[in-house]
Image 1: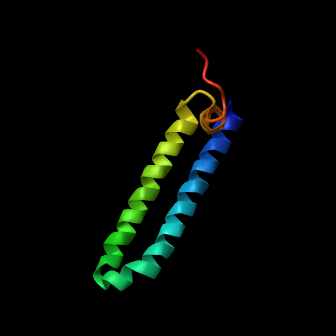
Image 2: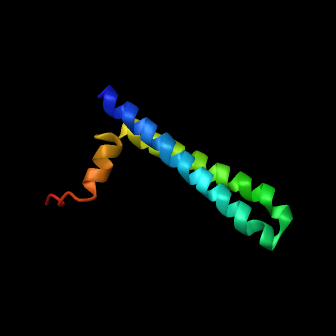
Image 3: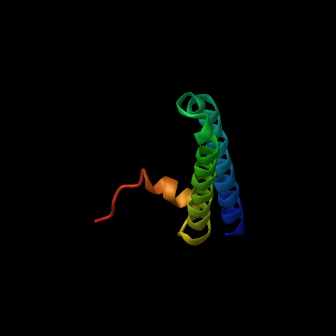
Length: 81
């Protein structure tokens, strides 16, 4: 229902934002040791990864049966033969 989709979208946003923020800290800590000129492009890559994550999880939350909850529960569900 609408509640599942709303919670799924909120979760998709939170996971994407968390990964983007975390990857930015990795870029801040490690990329300047290799090359200070690569910091900008590396940040663009992390933004792209965050955007793709948001789009993918958002699509699952809105379009798949059961949304994100159904996908996660399906990891532990026995296969029907």
